[in-house]
Image 1: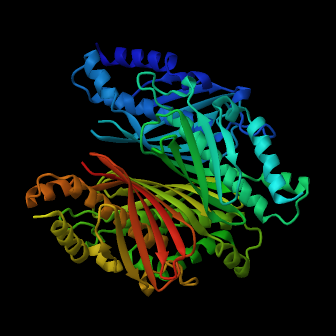
Image 2 (image 1 turned 90 degrees about the vertical axis):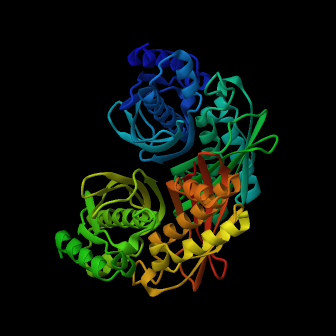
Image 3 (image 1 turned 180 degrees about the horizontal axis):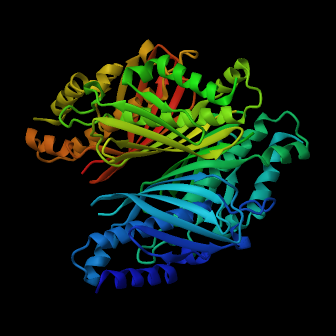
Length: 151
Length: 151
Length: 151
Length: 151
């Protein structure tokens, strides 16, 4: 199985079979080892404080954690030499978030939200990603830094 | 209105009228300026990866952000001299998370989860809280540090 | 006094009268509200572990904290309407670091090190900066995020 | 060589042969896998801003990074089964800081400063420590969280 196909299948699986991502409507739109992307649309249930119609900080943190995990997963795949399903499954089971920092820059207002992630450290054991959240008007809502266990 | 009554009303409001907290089943069980507490029970929709029945990291971050915000809000109330509803409402509108760090220590397994927060810096403009997440068996699942705008 | 002159004088003062910066040889080379820069050269006394000739992590954190503080200070100046020495001094006395995250990406090897900072949140009370450390060969040694009290 | 002796020798080496720790006067006073401690006394060269006689934030970050590294190193030793000098040296070469968060709570004033660290996650690859800095009057100056590569 070639790498593009693997990433495509993972994207499908992560989009359709992860309960909490589905609950929030998070949709992986780019599953790539250089830059990954997650999108979601406004829903009233994502509100923190009803007096100010803005995203709960936990929604922002969730989207950043996910998109950072996606780019880290794509880096795991990119480093694999054995592309059997079993080898991929084994490698991905090691993926977990060690720590996550979220910087909230602007209130989370918008119709659609776009989270992006880039890898800034890609080791055999630990990867670090930097994430951003923008709305559809390109307002910069949040920054994030995530450290992931990858091996 | 005395302070205990104010905190009681805020607890009720935050528990019943915050959509995302309700979606996750987060329940504030202690609204206090020294230590606050949030509890929630396991639900399948809170799962990250269905192959490993554990909480999504975003659920953990959300619970820590909430309980840190609760203890910060209680500190705002504790510093108020004017206890009119209007003064309280005005003060609380300034509350927002500046940044949040989450350290994931153990996989999020359990039947019930307890998030607690203590204030470690309480200024007129910025407050800092340290948070912890345990399950019902007292396994220490996560640590958090949150910086909140309070004035 | 115009803004450029103020920044010039601050740069001189910070470079010549801050003991710990001088001890480490940190030199502010750009004092600007959009992007600031600090440079320093390798010195054996900056070594952490003598078995591996690399910068102590504390040197990296110090350089990132400084350059983030410089860009935050320049933003305080940029927002002042009263440019008297007294007003400037009063405003700058409020500057302090609330929290600092440092991500170590590569071992700190090199002959010269360049720390840069950009503001990502600039409020009347709190500013957030993102920082980077590179060596003279443009190896990316560290990333940082700093939250500063500015008002 | 038994574990107590190993830790004793490491403490001696780290105290006497690490240039930057010596420059700052950092002295490891407890090298233990459960809780480690570093002490240092006030010196004028550690000042950030001369107008306010307080520690540079970089000094605080350095002390926290060191004491977290000490407790992480003691955990590496505690997990070793082969206690030969070579095995110890090999294991410790893997030790490095992945990321460090410092929360500044109070201005760094005092005659003596005590940094302490406890391990909150101790894995075969990654360890996480929580650190605190107090002065001799037990004022709580700073909190820290460090993620360390240990294997």
